[in-house]
Length: 63
Image 1: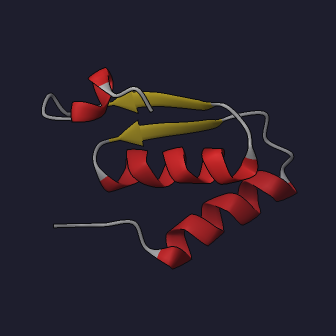
Image 2: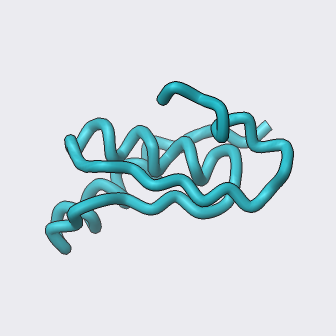
């Protein structure tokens, strides 16, 4: 099962910070959405989820 890699998370955070992102858009499912979610939380910016698979349970998540 795929999981969030530290390298991917740091890359998303670094690019988002360098570009002065106002939000992070997570498109896909599973690890991709989770990486965007954690990065946005750690950077203190909004997160937008665009799940592309029906089995993505984050649709009903409080987080």
